[in-house]
Image 1 (cartoon, rainbow, N blue to C red):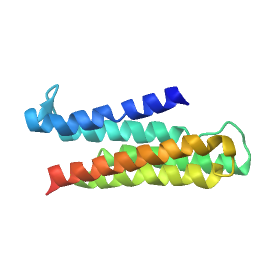
Image 2 (image 1 turned 30 degrees about the horizontal axis):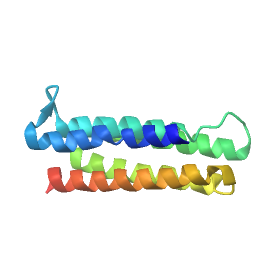
Image 3 (image 1 turned 90 degrees about the vertical axis):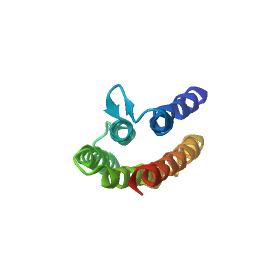
Image 4 (image 1 turned 45 degrees about the vertical axis):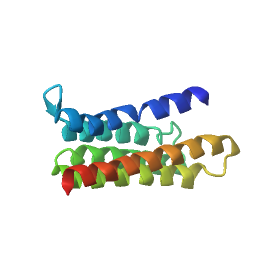
Length: 138
């Protein structure tokens, strides 16, 4: 669990880097910091949605696979939206994915520490998206 936590919190660094870099330089590698933030968010939300995937063919696994694909497709289509709308859509995917994970897996005791970590990370990611909205869209 320690490695998952370390990697999870390190995954916040590109979000913060994109926000902070806006103060110093509006681009990262000749790409607008907003775009870097949105691209990274779409990739991470798709990755997290992929964790819902189960290899079984029972009803629960099929529902989770469906949720996983929907969230990944929505994240992709968010890349085609205006930046401010994309930030909102992407910010909604994170708690929606967590809700699916909790709703379908909450009864399992071995998942409680993981779900607590996911709640903390999801809260931070949504807050960072709100800061990005305030910084870039107001």
